[in-house]
Structure formats: structure tokens, C-alpha cells
Image (tube, rainbow, N blue to C red):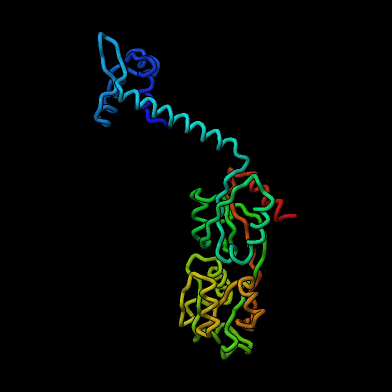
Length: 290
């Protein structure tokens, strides 16, 4: 949008009459004079001169007029190009586990088949994504964590289960274990706000166990880093089964044999109920409810 001082300048350029410009802009003549004086002071040059009760553009005024006209034409052309685009820009969020291990194939298909949407994807933990969603910084998010169902709507798209994993060299790797058996060992966990950590805490709470019962804890924000550390038998961890399928198949990690298994966790595509990107929301519903 053009600054109102420049709008006044253009009107005076067209009328070459301060009184007429004021009438067209529904302003007082002193206000018009003040706008022009402001521009002249800012640019340290005269834009108009007065001769024989007539107003004329100075050379500097003519240059400014040409520059503004160019910018307005360029701006209008850009808006026309944007309006003619055949796609909608969508800002999506993904949690780390979802982005790296669950949803990639979906994005590949979206890029191949969909021309009406242009996706911009941000990877963060569940807590951060829900905050961004509430603030309107993103349009929707793929998450594995819990959310307020009174605030957000959702479409289920996948399920995964938290499992305990360790190095094959871990001394209890072949034992049937309770959580209490693991309290003295190093636990590698995700950061606060991650859906993986929240799911672990929720399950432990059902067992009347606090995460703090694990006496030795290290927090890492990278799933791959956690896996590499655990492979070296530095500690154990809990993460979604989809994140360690390759390592379990290769034998570099081993599933802990817990006496009580975790319940499968629903992954959700979450959005605000009044989200304006309705077409994309409908497309997601078609994608995940077929």
C-alpha cells in the first residue's frame, strides 16, 4: 500500500492545484501542504515551485513521480501474477518422528500429484507446533502428541507404538523387564515438548511411575543422535517403533522385552476449526479417510 504522503503527492501532480487536490482527497488544503512539506523535508529537495499563482513540478518532483508510477505498475503486475497463480500456499508443521519416519511418502505423492497447493514445511516438537498453529504461523500440523480437542480439529492418519530399545550388548537385553529394573541405567530422552516424551510420561503415569524415577537421564533433541548413542550401549531409550525399524532389522538395536507393552498412539493431522485453507483440509480428509 502506498504511503498517504505519496498519494497526496500524486494527486497534486495530476491537478497541479493544492485546493483541487484537497477536494479530491477530502482533506483541507493545509493538510495537503503539510504532506508535501513533509516529503520535501525528508528528501531535502523541492518537489513543486510556485510561479504566477501556478504550481509546477521541479525536476526532482518529476523524477519522484516517474519512480512512484514505476513502483505502482510493478506492484500491480506482481499482484496480478499472484492472483493468477493456480495454487494455494500452505504452511505445514511436522514433528520430528512424523517428518522423518512416517510422512515422507505422503509428501512425495503430494509433490507428484497436486498442483493446487504449494507446501512449506516446518519441523518442530508438538508443543511448539500447537503454539504456532494457535498463533496462525502455520495452517496445520502432523503431530504424534496430545492436543486440546476443544481448540483443534483433527484427522487421524497413522498409528505408532512407543517401544524401549537398547544395544544388543546391554546386559539386560535378553531379560523380561519391568520399568523398575531400568531405573539405575542411563535413560536417553527427547526434549520437553516432544510428543515422544509426552507419550512416555503418560504411559509411565498409568503405571504410577514418574520419569524422574530414572536416576540417570540425558536429554537429546535428535532422534538419529539418540539412536547412535544407544547403539554404543551408552544408555537405553523409548521411541516410536517406526523410528527404529531399520536398526532393529539390522540388529544394531534391540527391543527391550517389557512385561507391559505401550498402547498404540494415534498420529493426527491437526488444524484450527475455522482454518481458512478449507480446500487443503478437505484434501487431507480424502487422503487419510479412504
